[in-house]
Length: 150
Image 1 (cartoon, rainbow, N blue to C red):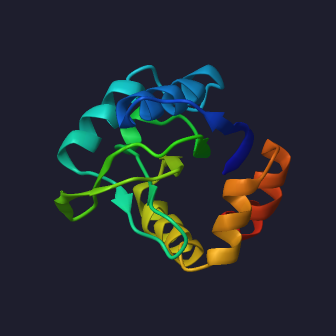
Image 2 (image 1 turned 120 degrees about the vertical axis):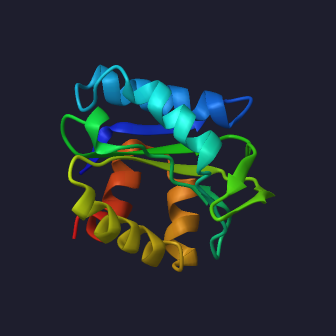
């Protein structure tokens, strides 16, 4: 599910919408999602924010309905500077993620399993720190692949 070509390092984005758009467009480019995916993720984020606090730093997990997905995939965006995301379940709380995990899930039944794996990952401070300081997409992939694609 995690793909090296969907890992972006040193992203310069002015806000969460730009992060989401850039990551979502990379899914379209590699053929994992329909064109509608980009706007669907942006719209869903407005109504159901995906920012989460983690042990090392805040993260976000933008995603949308499976009807926009052709094949399952996961992207990782590592930002040079954090941007504002609203917290999942408490949208009045503003978080500042530096790492964004975007999901394209084709089978809604798989979503819960994947989210559980990501939640476990969020408890691992060393792993999150290593991801944030990785210098290549290969390093990020090697760190996350065992945890995400288990």
